[in-house]
Length: 210
Ligand code: B12
Image (cartoon, rainbow, N blue to C red; front, top):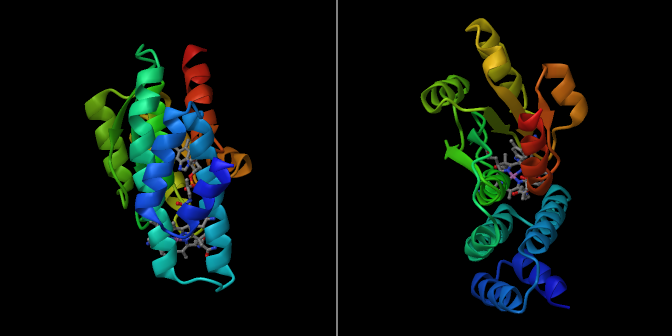
């Protein structure tokens, strides 16, 4: 089964083989979203192995880079499958102190290919820069990713800064990243928590239609 093969190749950081197999699977009609969902689980497993000291950081990095390479293979396929109707504008970034950008990049891909305009601020983004970019772009959403318990408070900081500036009602704040939960989103007063990139595009579209 190709998905299982791809899962193993990415886990082992075999970039060229992963790219070739992903391309072959897409050519054969495998759903690109299914590929991304499978590989998100792959990275979770890699993370567990890292946490248990079964593997080391360079191996995590290789797997991550391989996943990013596959995302680039999947991108044109997703783009050509979707009709472009502007659903909303999003400022998206990874919060200050956090360099984990793979999930954010997948969210960006899913949002763009489902009709959102995305301004990608990258990673290690200062909370005020999210707001500045949202003002410049006249965004509908501010999307903040955090992958570490130590950087989650930055998501709250964005919301607090918005309140301080009297801008809280102007933007819908959506948060995500592996350690985040609906409970955390409610606690900090975010508008939306999304577990994964696929649900993000759907839930955000639904929120803006309200
Ligand atoms: C890959 C990885 C790395 C790579 C990052 C490469 C890169 N360019 O991004 C490298 C090797 C560089 C790295 C470094 C470090 N890492 Co690291 N890393 C991971 C790992 C294994 C996977 C993360 C990932 O990419 N997952 C795959 C993606 C697709 O999933 P995702 O990010 O969750 O995103 C999905 C959803 O969450 C959602 N989503 C994500 N963001 C958003 C945003 C919005 C708005 C929405 C709507 C949805 C959404 O959609 C995405 C797609 O479906 C995790 C383990 C884990 N289980 O998360 C550890 C992990 C996050 N890392 C950890 C640590 C500790 C570190 C280091 C400090 C290690 C060190 N000792 O140096 C450094 C930190 C550097 C820093 N300052 O940020 C810890 C964090 C612990 C904590 N405090 O919470 C983890 C949990 C590993 C562990 N179990 O210990 N890491």
